[in-house]
Amino acid sequence: MKRSCAIVGCGKVGSTLARLMARAGYDLAGLASKSLSSAQKTGEKTNCDIFGTIPWEVTLLADVVFITTPDGKIEETCRDIAENSGFKKDAAVFHCSGSLPSTILSSAKSNNAVIGSMHPLQSFAAVGETENPFEGIVVAVEGEAAAVQIARDIAGALGGNCLTLKTEAKMLYHASAVVASNYFVTVQNLAVQLIKAAGIPEKDAFEVLGPLVKGTLSNIEKTGTVKALTGPIARGDVETVQDHVKAIQAWKPELLQLYKTLGRYTLPIAKAAGGLSEEAGRQMNRHLAE
Ligand SMILES: NC(=O)c1ccc[n+]([C@@H]2O[C@H](COP(=O)([O-])OP(=O)(O)OC[C@H]3O[C@@H](n4cnc5c(N)ncnc54)[C@H](OP(=O)(O)O)[C@@H]3O)[C@@H](O)[C@H]2O)c1
Image 1 (cartoon, rainbow, N blue to C red):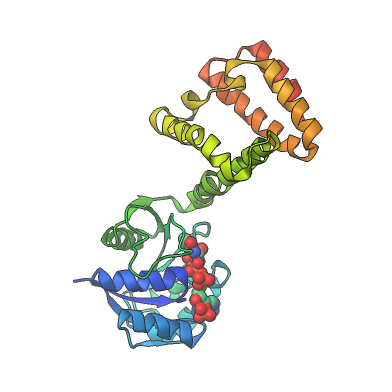
Image 2: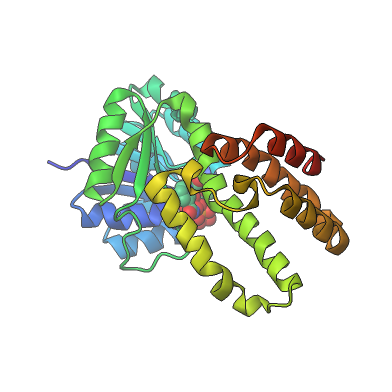
């Protein structure tokens, strides 16, 4: 038999979870949000008529509680529910934050609940009414063993692939996701600025750079990062690196630090790949120094 579930915080993630959990056959025990309108809207979409603004009134009967408020409100919301004896004994209480550990839910343990976190590695910015953003994505879970098992069941039922993390590893896992996604955008933005300075209109930039970017991603997938590295640093081409530095210095000196820093962090990768001699590495390091 599927567990019953309550959602506290009917925003982007909470309302999507409510819709998908109901679709996957879970009973919705209740929905709560800061404003009645958010809870009501989610209730109407999921045929759940138990909704309101007082979390412990809707969590009390739930086997599983998701606290999907903004990150800064999770701990306080959990504490409020626990102080009002709002968690059922043995209930599993989760949040969905990527960076915070499950231990911020420790107050729920005073109600004999178990705690965990379940983070979908996905953007919920614009989820359509019929879409399932959990389908095929990684859902990272951590926490108490009983909670982790329940989270694995739920993630699987929603179509996600579960990845179990150690609680203390969560922050670095999240930092990795930020680098892979957000800082990738920063690097692409630098590339677009450089190609614009070379006279190619921004609207055409991705047409020019896209195949290179996609090819590199495909090489990383096939061979890993070290073998996927090509270009002047990998070849030990000191003069080209020196010329880049001069050209960027003359064009936009404020972007030079970023170019140099990325270059410095590329040096050990090139060394590991075996294409960079000690001497070429030393010279490059000088040109790329702050
Ligand atoms: N957005 C994403 O792409 C994404 C991806 C992965 C994980 N997450 C995580 O998912 C969680 C929720 O994020 P979100 O993007 O869904 O946020 P969101 O759209 O801002 O929704 C948060 C909801 O919580 C409600 N709320 C705020 N304070 C509350 C309180 N004290 N008590 C009850 N409800 C309260 C809000 O109120 P109203 O009632 O006023 O609407 C809102 O509906 C966060 O932990 C976030 O890190 C988000």
